[in-house]
Image 1 (tube, rainbow, N blue to C red):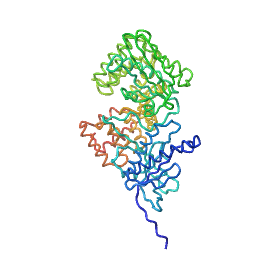
Image 2: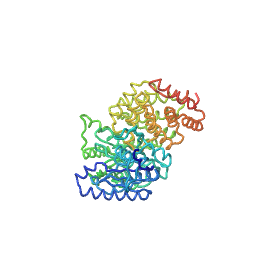
Image 3: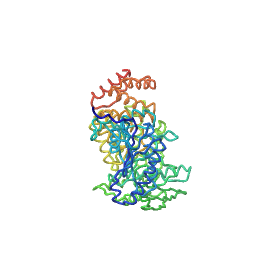
Image 4: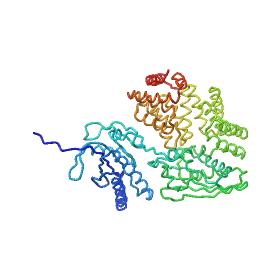
Length: 587
């Protein structure tokens, strides 16, 4: 007779390991070991607090067991949060980041330790995680269900060494909401880009003085508009940086939250027709002020301070510009004080995003065009307002609004100082008119002119999706999201739809659910989710979501919806429509 199998029990296993430990030890062995000990103590405290037990230490690795899988994943997220907080108090070259894997499986308990395939899978999952991140097996995901505020990114079926069957692995995406219900300003695990990176915080003004706020925002937008064209630079988008308005936060903290190295901050004080602007560039990795300067100006002069500050930033960051790029950066700005005033006031209304605000913004931008007819900013933003009217259905004639958007965009594109934004508008006009090659050409040209622009990248992703290139669309919209970790809902919808058409159905469903978390009544996200479920043979769930959609939009019809969808490949649209019809949506 064969030997009797050893007894096993089902357990949740957590395995954590330091990323790049050998490299850090080679740099400073003593300091790295001291930091490791502190971090291991934090991990042990978290394991105990979540009713788990540390079973084994192996150098920089930790193995822990939990009776409840919910406790294991809650502990993993708590560990990463504790370690992030601990790392913020350390210099950048002393920080240790752990990868964490969590699995639910059978283990053998013997002499105070645990063994078996369940442990091996947890260790392999840890190796898939990014530094500061977590990976779990499908057994964990299924057991957790909706008990934690997490989303998951499917990483595919992984074939691990010495493990017979492939393991379906998932990256854990935390999506907590603050008290206002808004997405946090940035993901906590962002790593520094491989090129000079910078975020421009809202400039501070005297509280409540709207005129000074216009001036401060205008100055920041001008600097951003110049820096966004530099391909050697990584620039965070305005949607993210504006969330720091009126927040008391250190440059080091803001940089860590946004995943950049440099922070530009400033202060604007206006008195009569004079203004004092103080600007500082801070390197967050050393908490060092790279340079700081004060500018005293009369507001009716040429107001060239934007160009002066931009040049100092580029010089300080030592950005290596391609041949001819310098000329594109130092563009003409609105030199006429009245034109500048109307432009900033127009932007203030434009950012509100409502129908009436868009009409007011258009009137302001038309005034800018009349005052300074040789500057591309006026017609560019007039084009944007007509595009949004058509896109949002705020117009009696969509065709007329699209025509006006195209006319104004072409006018801007023809100008010497065209900055790429009008190309984005014109590309989408061509897309809706089914001129796909022109749409792609202009969308790509917009990104060439504005490589750091989050909207240019996201709009190009949308064009790529409809032109039948979903994998390219996924990469492009991911880049847009990285440029602005606080991103609009439509970014998520593009990501979800692109994942779906690329065959990544789990990722598509996760992204669509995230969009619905942000906006429960969003129709586009719900349609993607229905199609993803239907394509994955989860027909009952697809039918449920379809009924939810009809309850929100009882007049929905596939005929009307499909008429608005500019897919290059008609068979793609036919497949989607048939999928939605099978789920119960009316023709």
